[in-house]
Image (cartoon, rainbow, N blue to C red; front, side, top):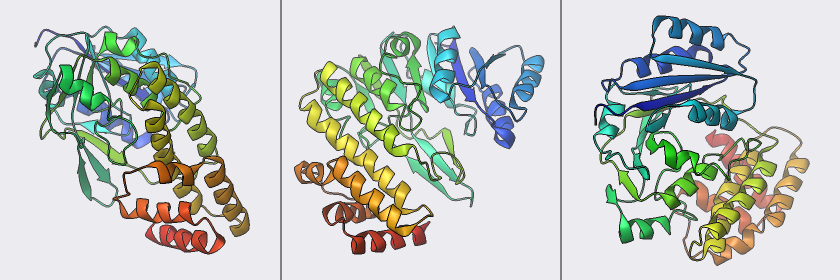
Length: 338
């Protein structure tokens, strides 16, 4: 399918020194039939001018400048203006191997309801790398086999399928048909709101074996890894969306699975609170209130899946025993671990 156009979309906001490696990884792709859409989401650091300079040298690059509206608004704008049969997303601080698009396209059939999904490499600033792959076995999922996997997408500590919109080749028609649940005010976990509907409605899913051509740059100062005072409200809103998705797509035990997914998202908020600086008593009060309001003890009791990750075990202990002593002990451990 070398004649099939692929649109690679990069949302950009103040990408700084990370931008050039990202864009250059797109221009070096061995798959040639690519349009590169770079969406400047109101950058204030000169990123927009850098993008324009690339576009002036390469006719295969198109730059869209828009008012700042957040990541979701940026990738949606790119998808709306794309021309490819398939879309790929690359975040502006990440990069892809030269043969990444070619390897994914080798698995494509031209169907309007398919997703080709790869693994990725976490690239840490200290040079350490970690390969990440879906926990489901690699292969082609269609028919009953796909339905079984779809029923297991929600509510597990280990993802059956990576739910990021990145590291994937997605039918553009499938993507555009499933934007209903996106919310531009959701700034963490927002990919769940589009990828879950896409995965529930796709007719062919390929989990590519041994493909780790997407490189995710782990930046300690990024929004994902620093303290976020709005994370709790974000997760509450995301939990409501997940419940709607589970109900609308008639997922068996969907409400229960959505609650379990909400629990795992709330674990991120607990980490957010445990690692932050501030008044100890105020932090302890916040943690106790959030555990209670989110019904985390009840969800944990209902979940037959026991935490396998050491951090998950610590958080489960905290949820079961949300007293001052437990909070201080777990907070000490998390802050020491960094």
